[in-house]
Structure formats: C-alpha cells, structure tokens
Image (tube, rainbow, N blue to C red; front, side, top):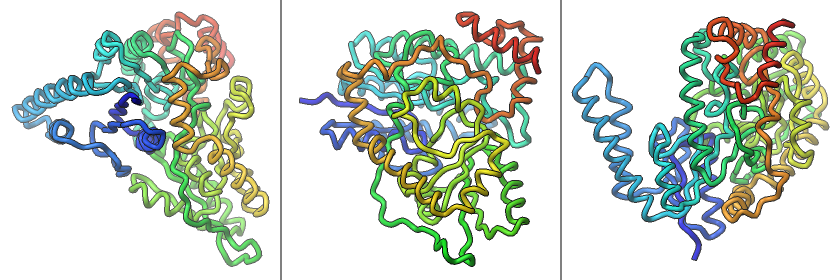
Length: 431
C-alpha cells in the first residue's frame, strides 16, 4: 500500500496542483491544500471539514483590517488553533509531506521538528526563488516605484531567512533548491531545475501565424507578476521601438489574470518575452509556453555560469540573452518565422519529455525512495551568483554597498562562504 502524501501550503504557478495530479496518476493518495485562495485560481485543492474551517479562519485573518483590533486578534487566535488542528490531523493521517516556498504548518518551521520526530518523510522545495534568495539580490522586493528595502530592512529579513532555511535543512528529509539561490544553504540539495516544473500537457490546438501574410501581426506575450522585477517598462520600450521600425506587432501584457486567461493567450501568441533579469532559463510562464510550442526570450547575467553547473541534457531550451540584447532577440524571432517555430517545437519536445506532471511526480517518488542519481545533487559552496534576479547590476551594486557600509561584510550573512564574500567585495571595488 502506497503512503499518503500531504502537499501544501502554498502555490507557485500551478506547480503543486500539477504535482498533486502527477502523484495521483502514479497511484498515490494526495491531500493538496493552500493557505489561501490563489489570485490565478488554479483550483484542484482537497477539501473536507477541517480543511474548510482552516481556510475560513486563514482568510478571515488575512482580510480583517488591523484597525479592527479585537476582531483581528480573535481571527489570529482562531487561525493559530486551526493550524495546530490541521497539523495534528495531517500528522496522524499522512506519511509523506511536500512543502513549497519554505512554508509548512508553522511560520517559523518549528513543526518540522515534530515531523522528523514522528519519522515522516519531508521534502522541502526552496528552489522557486525569493524564499531562499538573499533579499539584496531579489527584485521581487521592489515596490511599484522601483524602490528596494533599506539596508536595515534587508538585514532583518535575511536574518530571519537564514534561521528559517537552517531549520529546513536540519529537519527535512530532502531539500530541493536552485543553484543560484543557495547562498544561505550549507548542505547539498537536489537541483530544482533537474526535477523540472510539472505541467499538464493536454493542448487542444496550436496557433501558428501565417508567415506568408505580412498583414497578420506578430503576437508577443508578456505576463509580469512584478513589472519592476520583470523589466516590464524596458520591454514596453523595446516593443515601441520595433513598432516604429515598421514591424506589425500585437503586444499583449497580462498581470494578475486567472490562469485560464493566461493559457488562452499562450495559445494565441507567437512567442513570449518573459523577463530581463532571470536566474533560470525557463520559469513558469515560459514552461507553459513551451507546452504550446511557443519559444520564450529571457534575459539574465548568469547563462555561462548556469551551463557550468547544469548537465546539458537538463537545460530547458529558451532564447537566453543579456538584458541589453532583448531587442535584438525579439527582432530576430520576428524576422525568422521558421526558426521561431523550430525553437518552439524544440522547447515543446523538452518539456513533454521531461516536465510533464507524471514525469516530475516520478522524480519526486525517486527522492522519496532515495533512488535519485548523484548528478541531481548540487554543492551550495559552489554558488557564484552575485547578481541575483529581478535587478539591474547597478542596483545590486548600490544595495550591496549600502549593506556593507552599514553592517560590514557580515551583513551579507555569508560568513560560511568566504570565497563568495570576496566576490561581492571585488564586485563593489571594480564598479
């Protein structure tokens, strides 16, 4: 009899819903829940009496304004009580726990100790991005005005993040991480990029622009979760420049839209411009685009380093480039429809061969059974990323310089990795 799996308590681009579906296809009984309803409405969550009450209290806590002090306190207490009840129920009814984005039943991760005590298998996936990435390298913290937290705020956030990650490493059976966000990690981890992004692959039809008809506009899709971090304003400038040069473009930009609307636009588009400052060659939107046979342009500073870390067969196909080359790559895809279609088909073949929900679920099963190959492992002491994601180099320099001036090099929380500290010091001196 296969062990029962608990998946939660957050959702990232449909990852955990799809993983739950994949494990179910492999014959596992799965409970999948999230702390609150996702804005993209992925759906597919498990429901029963205790889960309904837990989510109700969590929602009330989130949406009760602080000015209603008594109500807020009561809902916080109710939420804590229900979290404990949910944990106790899950503890005695499940044998395997898969947590995403550094979450678990307790905000500080103290429940992980008890899961370890009861000999549960715990897989913690901290390879999505901001949950492990140093805040001083994370554009996800940029506000609408493009402002990043102060040095004091960053130091506090990362102090808590280091403690949280330490607890995850200590009590999890297995940790899945990303090579370029492993700055604070001490133990080897399974590379998230090798496991892949689980995606449902039922595609009804594929639209391909009539390349012989110049009257048909090229449809370009961009879907920023955070416009500042994704380089949306620069991407808009690129599109306007191409239009002024006479290219017939239908530019579609989606933000905070339901998932089914995103899928509809992926079906209609010719290619995707994902972001300017990424640390992974194919993120959630690009992966979904690949299942539709559409290529993705993605900018970043780390592509040569990424190829040194990742075995070639595990690198997802995309059009990678420096942030400054987004314009030339977009123009290249517009002018070469045969190449555009070929790149899309290459990406589609890769994700269908490696990242279908059932295949990613099989990789998780290998981890559960301790049967994965050594090439899936990464050494956190080999991380060389000093640019992060979602930030221009110049902004990274300013942020890091401010922290070092305020707290010294210790402010980066990298004392266990002196080589990486020196890289940051050299970066500041050179720039």
